[in-house]
Image (cartoon, rainbow over all chains, first blue to last red; front, side, top):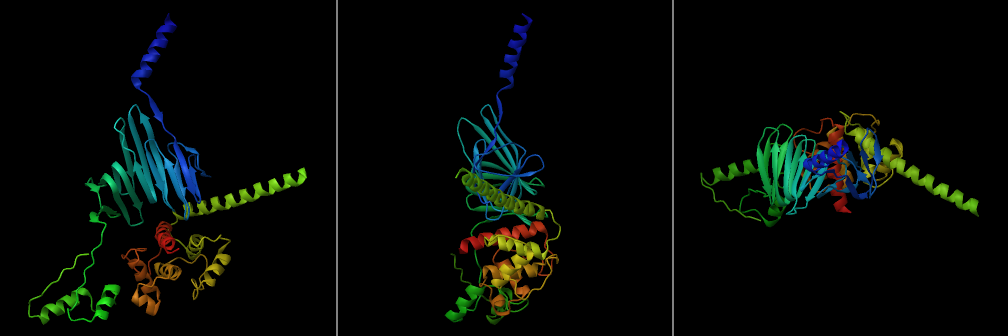
Length: 240
Length: 153
């Protein structure tokens, strides 16, 4: 009788706690050289292997690793190092946390209606929470860059500033804590006299600001034009 | 016949193991480089050789590979000489054949090689060609270099 009671209690506790799976990451493919480190030693990584939580992953020159996590796919780019902190399936919630120490990763998170997905990426200067679907993170020596080609991402830096990225926005966080959101497209500004020859215009477009310090930069040219025109300036804006 | 097949299979397994161990030794080297406070000339030479897809067989052999392509010509530095951004920039500018910078094309100095690398997005503009390069920074610069060299092939 006592045994039956203990068994019943055990079954009830099991269902109350819920079903928790630590999902091992699967190595989908390895191009070049890659290794993982779970117990202090770097071991070679091959396609088809299972990688447990807590493992660090490192890629070599011209090497790419694709990992399949609980509800997402992570591509680790060359000369990169990342760690899988958590990769769990708890009932209908997928909870994945990875950290990027250096290099770049691209995370593609699958959004399924029946599964609540939490996917966080931590870097030395900021943490992002992917709301779906694709996010690129590059951790550099001076700057960490977040982009979201598809879906949206919430990025939080060390001082608690939060930005939501989507589309062609890029969040750059520098080591000294200055973060900014910029657009991926670049706009070039050129200031020149309207009477320059086509060859001079082509050289200006090609070389831009490439001139020795203190000689003939855009500001000097702008000042010269302003003084020459007696305080007035005609401005032509050409958008790409 | 059986003995030959056995010897051949041992040879294949041994060769695969040695190639694998060399790849792992390179990866271990890269991971240790990321923790080095100061990179040296030999690190830059090695990483450029690796990016070229060649095998690295020691500093002198790596140097010979780069000398044959005029990447390290004019430099007689020791393997353990502290690496400066100017030296690294010039090696990379030669390796990638950066031709977009007017003044680098004319003078080919470390100063303008640094500016050319900044313009190409390989290095950042804060600092100068005299700054030392840490191991982590060298890895980041080589990562950017690899993206461009991969596009050019």
